[in-house]
Image (cartoon, rainbow over all chains, first blue to last red):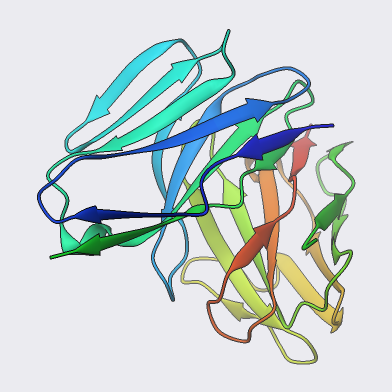
Length: 109
Length: 116
């Protein structure tokens, strides 16, 4: 079967760095997405990776290793507003999106 | 648990035809269902929110008459793209929630629509 694994919940301190991992097993691969969802709001796009390596966008970076079926989202200089759920999704060979259950990130002062 | 399915997974149609996409919550009752459109390599755009038994709430800029949403039961919502045109070609994703407001959402696998 196809599945995406990511931790259910993580806690980090304001100003610190946190890495949210995502491992996947899918039939084929056509890109990996990270979304942020604040409670009470729609998900918002963070990043898209289709080639191996690191994509950096300000405080957020996303890494992909296709051979390992692995990605991570790195958040630097954490702010209280980063408290949210982070969703990993992989597009398989049929262009279907396989969603992770999301990681709830709690930021403490 | 909390599985959401969509049907069809992909559809190709001629310009001017209407296409219906179904979203089902398989093992739970979804009080609220959401319809999104995903642009290539980019963001998930919320189109509308529907609560079972009531009219859908559309986001600004989304045409109600073009994208008809019906949430007739607690396990089924449908999105009908009426008189589809090539610019409607996109990836449509639904999600479902136990809760009436923005609770935890469970996403479907998406439907790829190609309009010729």
